[in-house]
Structure formats: structure tokens, C-alpha cells
Length: 312
Length: 312
Image (tube, rainbow over all chains, first blue to last red; front, side, top):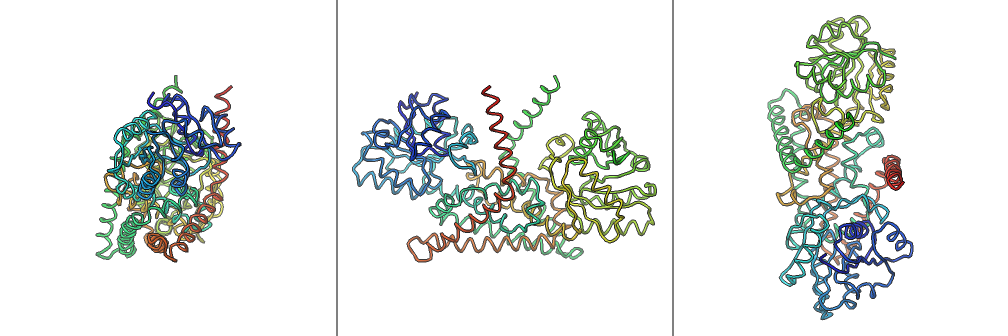
């Protein structure tokens, strides 16, 4: 038991999932939720995401050892501003925002300005779903997910260690990056994909969407995400998203040139282009296999195990 | 029972899946497979994908009412060439190739040249997996998948009808398109995604790949596909893939401009860009929801049902 009393501000998809996991795994003696409606409070209690929940943020925070801000990125700074005056000395505040530079900078400034004795450590558990609300919290896979923690020169070491332990106690694998590094990394792995998936949906015709298969379905899942939330995330990380998008654009321009050559079969350029397209696909596949091989093997083994059990 | 004797040429991922489904659903009185190794024959028989299998294509084809070419796209025309002399009058030949214009044109020419009395009807069941081989045939979802059938002015109507009935008997939803329409549609829904997914993997750094979450995993699944097979498919449909890739490139250029504006917060352009990014995401989401809403609701209902059963 690392944190006696955890307060989760915001009982949506992620707040609900974190609450459930913290209670199930004994990562907290008590989980108190802060919501903005009676309805959400009832849902959170009913599904065991919290021991109790309240509309009264100040009271909930005053009684907490750790406060986790689980509100959308656009509201994290405002939530920190509201939370800070209610914190006792040494209270640890963390968040789960998908962008970090802006949030960490602004919250650290707030702490200085308010002369708060609370400690802030930015976090980002890298998991989620295109779905929304505490109703869908069960779909969130925390176990085995990555969680980036983003300390700065101002970060209290002991608080960093406790935040790290907390996420690990929920089954996440933690990594330490500066907020700026985090934003550069996530622009590529998450923010650009959240633009690419809708772009792919946008170029579909009615027919191509209707007659599509599992490939397009997987590739378009992120297009089902909340547009407001993602506009905010991309807005907060626009510089890095722009860079990653430029790199992707360059890849696609090169590919378009190869495809152009391929469309002239029998010409000397066509065979060379074929070889380059193959190489491009083979290299990407190698990276895919390397990254996901262990997970794929585990799934296949489990499927084989299930098949065996079915036979018995 | 529509087809008495079905012969599947090529017992890989798809051939195996089609054989299993045809036998399970009684779509054939007898399924004979043609493979290129004893090992595959044994695997196919062991998993019930065929009633029997052989290395002797001519004998298997001579005895069939319908022949399904389940070899990779680059080998379909050669397979048709080898199969045709062995066919009886009225034998129906179909295929499962992911590109259609070139294949349908060439096979129709072969039939004319060989003065064959067999009938060819092009098909494309739109399902698959990044995995390979008959070992993974269980991962193929035929039930509910789309299947495009691509008749031409030369197509025998009765054969078209029988091919249509056959796929329907396996649980697929059939659609009729010309080979050219098929290739334009699939370029968008499948072939470009098979380039986009590897392109997204290509722009990842070691760190962004390591620290990624479920979003990137779904978006990069197609990068795990067989590079030879996909070089061939894209090669055969290069003109249409080029067009679709150009449309996607245009979307990304527009997006990059918006992101560029976003990265200058406080400027008059930034707020308008935010609105346009939101609109882009919201429109794509609406199309996503419309296409997948029924499937998503079904999954959620099943999950709720499972949860209920767990409680009882």
C-alpha cells in the first residue's frame, strides 16, 4: 500500500478505469472520486470505481495523499488551479494528459505563484479507447500499458518515486522522459495516427467504406475518437505534430513516385520501383514484428491453448 | 447444396478458411484441395479444411464442378492457365485475388485462346489477416464479410449466379462491381491502407515504437502483412492506388497547413485552424460511426451480456 488516500478528479473513461484498478489491486486504502454530476457519482460507486465520490472537490482533495487529474487535457490546468489551494503540504498531484510540455510548465508556474506546498509530477498512461465515459472504463487495458512520467528540474524526487510506484502497482510499465521528449515521441506514435485515421476515412467513397474489410476497420478505429478532445491534444502539441506529419508526408510523396513508376509496367523504372516498394514493406514489417512479436506469440499460444481445451 | 464438388487450388490462409467453411456449412458435397507439398496436405486434412487433398492438380480439377483459385495474386493467371486444360465443359472457375482488372482480363483471354468451355467469374472476399498459411486459417472471419464479384460482358450469367450463391452460402455479403470499379474501390479501402500502415511504422523512432499504445498497434497491424504479396497487389493496381494516394496526400498537406497555424497560438489564424481541425475530425467520426455503429453496438451488447452472465 503506497498511497493511503487517492483522489481521482474526473470520473470518465480513464478516471473510472484507474479507480477500479487501484481498488482491485490495493494500490490505495481509499479512492475518492470527484465528479460533476450525481449521475456519474452513482455510476462510479455502482461499478466499484471509487469507495466514495463527491461533487465537493475541495473536501475530497483536502483529505488525499495523491490527487490524479483525470479531466480532458484542455481542463487539466484549470483543474490544477482549483485543486492546489485545497492541498495539504506534501500532497502529490499527477495527471494523465496526452500532451505534457504545456501542462507541466503551466502547473509548475501555478505552484510557484500560489506558493503551494503540493508537488506536481506529470504522467501519461498510454492507453485508451475511442469510447467515452465511465460506462466504457472496462475496455481500458492498464495492465502492461506504457506510462510516461515527465519530471523536470523542479520535480520533487520523492514524489516522482511515489508516482512511479503507483503506476507500477496498477501493472503499467513506466518510462521517464522530459515533457518535451514525451511530446515529440507521442506526436509520432499517437497524435499523428489520430489525424491519419480520420484522413483515411475522409478519402473513402460511399462504396469503398461500405465494401471495406477488417483492414480499414482497424485503421479507422481512431477516427471514432472524440473530436473535441483530439483537437485539444493536437493543439497543445502542434509543433511536434507538425514535424511528424511532415515526415509522414515525405514518406507518402516517395511512395507516390514509386507507384507512378509501377503504373508503367515494362519500363526500366518499374522493376526498380517494385524492388523499392518491396524493401519499404519488408523493412516496416521487420520493425512491426520486432515490436509486436512477443505479444503476437502470446496471443497465438493462448488461442492454441483454448483450442486444446475445447478438444478435451 | 449448390456445388457438388469444389476444388480449392492453394491451401494457404484463405484456401484453408474457405475449405473449412464450405465443409462446415454444407456448401459442397466434397472439397478437394490442391497443394504444393505433402506437409500442407496433411495439415489441411488434419484441420478439416478438405475432404481430401492432392499434389495432382489436373486430376482434382477434372473431377470438380467449381474450382477456386486461392493462390497469391501473382500466381492466379498462371494457375488459371494450368487449370483450364483439365476442366470439363461448364466447370466454373473463380478466384479470390485482391486486384481484379488485370486478372479478369488475362483469364478471359486465356479461355478464348485455349477455346476452353470452362467459365470464369472473378471474386474477392474482402477479409484476411496479416498472418500466413493454413495454420492461421481460423483467424479469418468469412461470416458477414463483403465479397465483390466482378462480371464482365463475357461472363456466363448462370456461372455468375452460382458463384454468388456459393459465397452467400458461406455467410458472405456479395456485391457486383466491374473489375475496374473493384480496383478503384479497393485501392482506397485496402491497398492504400496497406501502404499507410508501413509508412506510419517507418516514421517511428525506437522510442516512439517502444512507448506506443493500442492506437499505434491497430494502425500498424497491416504493416505485419506479407511484403511480397502486397508488392504484387499494389503492382497490379498501381494506377488506382496512385490516385487514392494522391487524394490522401492532399488531405495531409491541408492538415499540415492547419497544424502550422495551430502552432502559432494567439494569432488570428490559429482559432480558425482549430475550428477546421475540429470539423475535419468531427466529419470523419460521423462517417466512422455511420459505417461501424451497428457492429459497435453489437459488440457492446455482447460485452454487457457476458458481464451479466458472469454475475449470475
